[in-house]
Picture 1 (cartoon, rainbow, N blue to C red):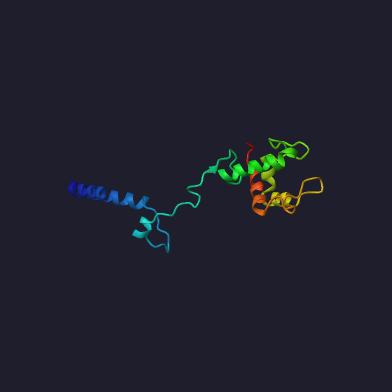
Picture 2: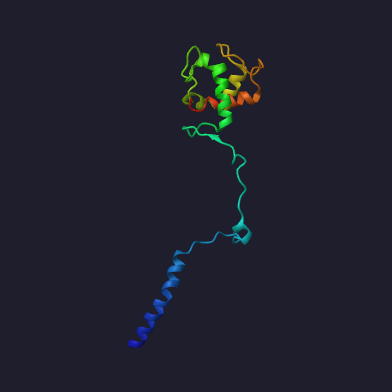
Length: 148
């Protein structure tokens, strides 16, 4: 009797690792083929902006700008916008253009406003020919970033 009990214990101990491995095994997804060697070796290509220096805004919701775009937009802002909206965009004769206001409006709304102006005195920079469509887009993204 004692030897049959010992054999049972040995059998149970031998089966224990298999039982544990089976209990913790991840279920396979139905219809999913196993990963192939080419898939394992695959490396994605780099970003098209990999070698372009980006402007890093402290606000994660601000639209991305390259360093060159930011520098150009800053120059345009100081030449055309700062007189009314202030150097820090907190407003003067024009309304404030701080990110808490401009991000809520969104890029598309800002582009329309910059391009066509307003009856309240905002010049129509785009339709007057002072800024082309790319510059209007650039300025709409710039004023959503934190002022320098």
